[in-house]
Length: 528
Image 1 (cartoon, helix red, strand yellow):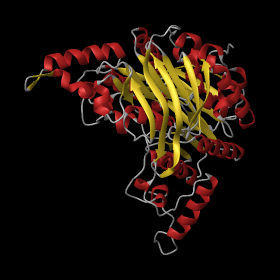
Image 2 (cartoon, helix red, strand yellow):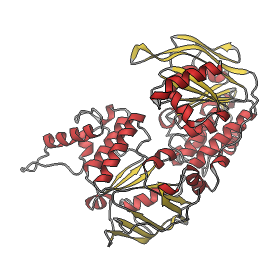
Image 3 (cartoon, one colour):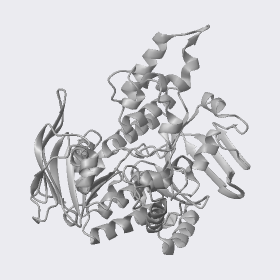
Image 4 (cartoon, helix red, strand yellow):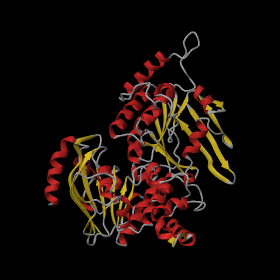
């Protein structure tokens, strides 16, 4: 499907217009003369890879930063925002990708921080604030006590608090930067309902997400940035996913992911009748008698909805969660009873779901993070050989294409995609026979995703067995040789990824309740 590059808008009804926006950092142009408009009662989705300039443009529109050149118009009149508070006073609010919350404060205090409701006597009206918070939480279908400390909430609930804070501002323009990155499928559904309500009230919404299909579902108009320039825009009815991918990365969807070898070798990982109990409710099994195999040179995907038991399966196989029953074998050897370190030494590595919490040590450099899991390989006598370690790090950076100024750079200076590649490199440096990856592309752009799946395909061609979990249906099919579907703790279907369509996989996972049972039963029968 072809759209006119940088097509002209179909309406003159614009609440905020950015013209010729340029932002220069030293000698680098993050934005190069971008024209961008936001319309009331509509969702404008901003697509682009990491570094394309999306966040920079949003920071300028929300008053966080000033443009090097260019102008902003609000309701047709020139405007200049001196700060984010200035922009908020004029009706422009932003939901940040990185949560902007005070964990030591309550839900209520975070939502009203800096704009507290006051009594006629000038004191904070906590009763009125509580009432507003409860109304917001009812709207977001989240049962949170206003007095609960944010630090005591799970990540998804903290994201809800961030969203509630923006809604409380009663903004005319609402910027949503990766608002669903920590939300469950049901929470995403609720957010989409809220977005429809906001549109009906005339609120202009700018939406940014690496989940391309999700973004297309909610958007009215798509705008694509690449290397700081606006390269395409069109109404959603004229475009599709392939158009977005091609405009973002300059390649068609089918060219993005590497081809896979259809002839795997011997079984390297065996999971037999595995049972894992829910740590919060031990009487319930989150993994319920699961059996599967992964062969050398094969990439197997586990697809399922949030709560299907996917993460618990991966962590049990890696030795991070206790097993109630069943067996895990690595190249025929039973690894039950072995800890995580022992399993790594035997050739089994896990790239965890939360790279910030479980995959990286933020205080360490890029290189030291990468070498951490294999540090024993660099010890000679009682000394650590920096020469050997640095050589392995440099090779790892080259293999995984980690974009960093130096191995000594702080790991926090990397983009999300490059942080993820650093975590994968860390596990590859242990020279595994089997690599487990839990949501390997969460929160990263399509270009970085393509690089990661290309890397996995290359490693599989050299004999690595790969088992990964994803909630992205496109990646489940395109990135694997074989696909198994998990639903409520059980494996309910198995497919050849080359011969299955999205509808069938989604039905088996329970995303289409009417078809799930029939499809799952038929496909498991066929796979046997």
